[in-house]
Length: 417
Ligand code: SF4
Ligand code: SF4
Image (cartoon, rainbow, N blue to C red; front, side, top):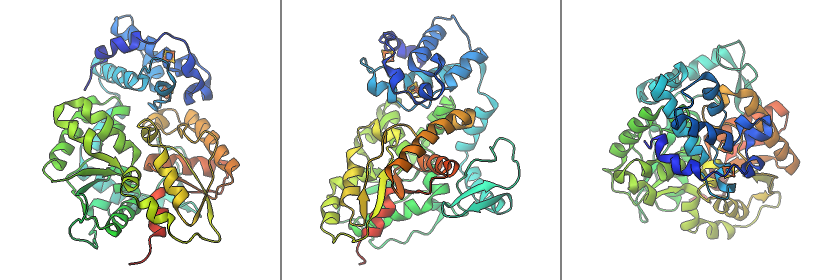
C-alpha cells in the first residue's frame, strides 16, 4: 500500500485555511482542532519529519476521523485527508505494531472460515443474549457484553451466509453483459436479503449472476484499523478469486466495497486496474441498463410510501448521487422526499464507531433528526454499514422510520413473470 511519505506533496498542498471545518462531521460534533483535517495533516507532517513518533495522543487524534472524504470534496486544493489519515494509521502500526483491536480485525477478516463460523454462532448466541426490537429488525443486548454498548442496536447475523446458500437463478446464461457479484461482508453475513434482491432484479433483466464464494472482505474495515498488510492480503485474494471469471462488470451493492474495488484497489498495482474499469455500483448499472425507463412506465401507486435517501460516503465520493435518486423517483410505489444534509456521513466510519461511540452517536443523532424532519416513513440507502448506523440512530432517537436498501423497492416494483 502507499506509504505516508508518498503523500508529502499532498500534505504540503494544505494551506491550513480551515474551509474543511464546515463539512467535517467530527469537528461539528466535537469542535476540537484535533478532529478536523488540517490538524491531522499537521500531525502526519510531524510524523514524516520525525517530530513525533506514535505517542498515545497522536494515535487518539488520528483515530478521530471517519475517513468519510467530505473534507477532500470541499478543499480548494482537493487534499485527500482521508487517504493521508489512513496512511498515517498504517505508519503508526509499522512503528509500534497494531493495537490489540487492530490485530483482531486483521486476523478475523483474513480468515473467512472463522467469519462464517462467527456468523452462524453469532446468530445462535443472539437468541440467548439479545432481544429483538419490534418494527426495526434490530437486536439489543439483554446482558452486558464487554466491548458492546448495551444501548446499541445490533444487526442480526445470518445463520447461513449469502455465499453459502443455494441461489436458484431464473436464467442460466446472460443475454446481456456477464456480471460477477461482489457481495462484501455486510451482505454476506448480515443482510443476505440484499443479495437475493440483486439476483432477482438482474435475472428479471435477463442477466445471469456469477457468484464465487472464493471472494473475501474488500479490506476497508482493515484499512480503517490501520492494518495495511491485511488490506494487501485481502485484495490479492479477491484478485485471485475474481480475475479467472470472464466478466464485463463486477457489481457491488455495498458502497464501501465499491469504494475499495474502484478506488483503493487500483492504487495497489497494475493488476488491479481491471477493477477501476469494470466495477459498477448496482444502481449505476441499473441506470445504464435503462431500468429507470421500464420502472417509470409502470402504473403509479395511489398510496405511495414516503421515502428519503441517505448518501453513503463511498458512493458520494465517486459522484454517484444521481442514479439512486433517479431510481427512487421512477419507482411507482414511492413518493420521494429529500432530507437535509443527505450527503453527510452517518457517523459509522468503519472502526470509528467502536473507538468513539459517543461522537458517532452525536453524528447519527443529527442524521436521525433530518430523517424525522423529512417526514419519510422509510430511509433508503445503498450500504449495509450505513444501514447499521441509521437503525441504531433512529432507534435511539425514537424516530419510527424504517431503514432499508434501495434494492428492496426495485425488487418490489418488478412485475411477476
Ligand atoms: S485540508 Fe484543504 S480545506 Fe482543509 S485546511 Fe487544508 S487546504 Fe484548507
Ligand atoms: S475524512 Fe471526514 S472525518 Fe476525517 S477529517 Fe475529513 S471530513 Fe473529517
